Length: 226
Ligand code: DC
Image 1 (tube, rainbow, N blue to C red):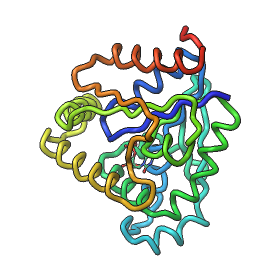
Image 2: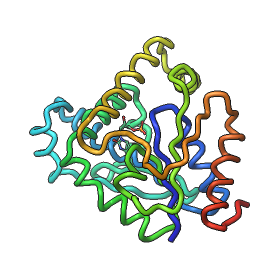
Image 3: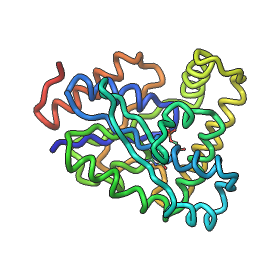
């Protein structure tokens, strides 16, 4: 099985680039942030303070979380049998996801789910600790990043297109706060693996980012994109 790990901060374009590359190589795209978001949503819906690790940990045995793929090959997240793929994208859920992801027990709870995907399929998996913790032997490791302004600008446009009423400053501040928390946590912090290829997409188009990642995958695996 081939595995490609793409890590990096929020808004660097990981998910869109990873999704496109997965389509071109015929690999399964695994968005691990969506799994943390599902736990964040579960806690939020029950009125649990997502910073209260004792309360979040006691919720874990009651959770039923499923990662499934629909007929179009899209990843969908299910919480207690209900498709929550749309809900987990709500801006207020982003910080909840970051909060629960800082809890070591939450990360342990999700490790097998992520590793099992890589055992069963050729995958492109994106997240924060894929190359460092989840798949340390991945065939390809990319650390995809961009300046804070470029990332906030992309995220802002994405949210406005979806009809959200947010200001650019709000998006920039939320993003900085979340990245700071993801970088500084003790459990599997966001960082590049020593053997990751660093790719700064600040002044790259989407197509160029895809081309660069595809080239790396081809070089390291011998596979060719469609
Ligand atoms: O990729 P995302 O923005 O959807 O991720 C939401 C949060 O989940 C992010 O702030 C940090 C956490 N996360 C993580 O800790 N480890 C991962 N592999 C993926 C996401």
